[in-house]
Length: 197
Image (cartoon, rainbow, N blue to C red):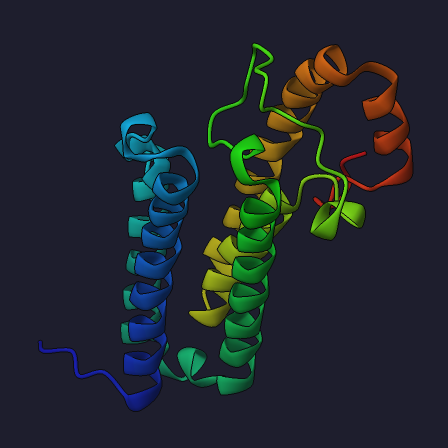
């Protein structure tokens, strides 16, 4: 049985692949531009085994639902809502990277370095962890764009759980590095990921 994709399906899948390529490619390019090629590894592409499994699962969900319930994928307004989220998440994350400059890294710093500063201007004025906020919105948006109900819920829960563990760990070190300056900042500015203080 050959699967023939509708216009909407072709649009959704091409937007998904373009979003993934742009997200990871731009992360790598910004990391090289900010930190220099010698200080950047392929980990800056942010592609892990768990991430690949999640993306493969979401594409399998899409294909299975498309074959069994093709009308489910034709809700263009839901798909466009997800596309909007994806774009907003991408913008927030890239603003975070550009604003923080050398203070932004993909790995949590456990040792303070001379060029590591507490960034509280730009997007950091309204969101304490805009990189995480942007990725959360982006990742959930990819699944809403595909009209994937199972993956939408799964991505929201898994990404939220990841940040619920990562943010306190990272903030432990930020409090060590910046002391009362970070405490005051954390009291004033929300984390940017739902239900995380």
